[in-house]
Length: 461
Image 1: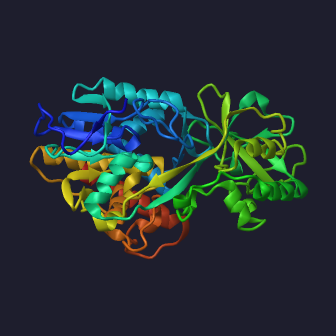
Image 2: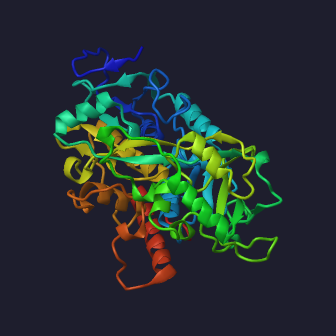
Image 3: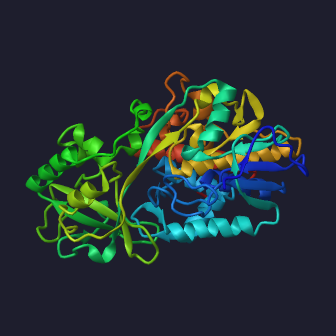
């Protein structure tokens, strides 16, 4: 039976300086680690397995629900790679676990899902300042004075209703879709081949980290037509007006936007050469390793709301996947987020109830790393508050600071939408610079500023 703690609950034994964190995803796990490392007692409340969500498959903390990729790890040229590096320097548990369980993925940081989640959970369970409570929190009790809500895009209805009652906010939501996973030995490697785009080397030194399934023009156009015609998951009436997040569109939604859309998106063939023809294919489907054994591979960019029968039928028309066995088919779930510029202050506290601080995707950041990054900041803000002190936010010239600024005061509250970290969120350089030089200069400025903020001695970058 679900344990739901409500506002009327009279809990005993509450430690005044204790931090309660609701949600054991990436943001909640990172927040718990940061606060505990600062010497503060933490109770991490996770409702699974008492109550599961429509997307999670395990009860593990920091379970990766969609992709297993944390995206680019290049800190000098990519904003998310810069965020990785800043978090590493800030003692991030999420980044420590990711680095320990990384898989070949070209220039990206992909991880073994089970190993990654297990490492995060073991670290939290073994920390003397952390207690893990498996229970649903419907409404944080009034005598909890320092709370972080990190329930993510799958916030329970009861807790969402509590927040809505405090803010008067209409529900803001979008749909997020999950890509299928294919068993490696069911992929025909007489047709497909291993190669990273432009032969780009990843953290492990490999330049052939993706399996590529080529399509000629006729195959591609037939595939697009099948996607558009395929039977889709039906939405409930109240869900029909909910928008998708543009950065994670279902493959069939992209296909419906124009016949060439996929060739300039997840099926773009640039930087690849089919060894059988020595030519670039018309289009390509890429698969990326999903577990440490290399037995499971996910279809990159193929999140979908197609019904399972049509997924199997249509995806088996892809060359090299005619006999594919799917360890998991794609799915779809509803994501919820706050209008953070209107509702949260600069320390991520709910203006209507400052005892509540929010972290992760529910604040309107998009992506695993961004969610964990806001958890990192929330944990530091909360632990500083528990000591009766205040914390200076990270400078907006850093990836951490740029994200925080975007969700608390940098965006128009009337048009606020979830956002991945990107260099467009950073203040401009003092001198105008274009192209890669601009990104590199911004990245080096960020590292210098994050070192200062963390009190680290600057190293030769």
